[in-house]
Length: 473
Image (cartoon, rainbow, N blue to C red; front, side, top):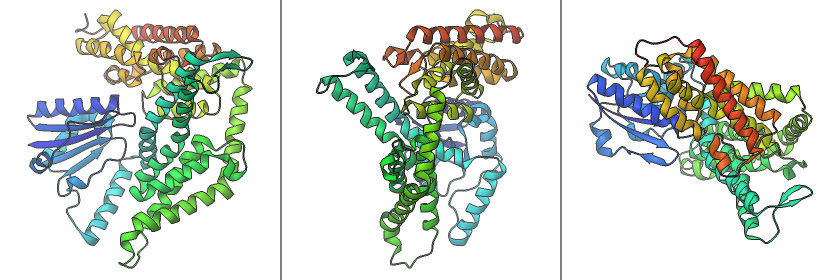
């Protein structure tokens, strides 16, 4: 049997390639032939050709964001998330052998509509969350703007900043001021991009323009008389509003003569007007007020309350290693960077890398507690931890979740609390030692103290909880 596949995840880094590896390994064990296209952060790799698709007996899509499926019409298509391909690839491929995978787009007219309804019902039964998928689609497109903007600002401040009463300031008209302005431009595009691609995930291309326009309005308080914009929260809401409004308009029956201009004219205009006016006259000011209150509340945090926040964020980041809890904490920190609260991202940046670093350290030092393949995974985990990829701990956690997950949560909580106590600030929405190399971290010493302590706590607790293995050596 010959199959083709696609893997993709929001960040386009770890899960994308781990899912592809899982599918390739499972296919090899079953004697199947499979070619997997990865849609990662650097773009499409191992791209499927028309010939590949034509010869394939089925298609498996393991993705956490929207994937274009029109090229697979008439083929059995199985859709799932990346973690399922990482952990249960064999079971997925077995469904093709059993003939349990439905053909995509094989029917027309009313039958297609009915098939789509049944597909939606099936998805609900499997407890898949479309809202999370749409959100992650927006986040995946936003991340390059976040990283580029944050790094440019950090580099310009570290190399071109001069001490002033208000901290580092970059002289007007200087070369580094131009770099700083470029970074600020990238930052200003983050929310519109986030909203636009959330809307596009919901309503396809007709949702893109309304989402970006709505996101821009949400982020610019001048539209609704507020000094502060609605920020990331407003952008997310604008994206979902624009997407579902555009989708609703798409479903309205119109005369055939109007149909050709619906996706390029009617839908974008009506949806843009709707979401823009809703934000200007209804939602913008209240959400901006909420964000301002949140910022003021964080500024007023001292002592125990800051430590508690660091503990909570560290636990969320570590618990599911790149999953929904991790992403909620990450988005919270990213949003507050633009609100002048980089300390929250500082705690998250320290916690992000402790699961892979801690488990990698444990597998290298306490070898009798780990099988040989886990020891190899530990080496890769260390490398991934250094560049802030929490997912590096997944192979080790999957092998022994009830002992590993408490260990990495304890380490993440330790790192988050210490970073908060040490006033660590991260001006880039990313984590791990790599961000310190680019000058994005304030209080670098405490940042590394937090990481080291979190890593050691994780490793020691894993050694205490895990039992020796016959294979470990």
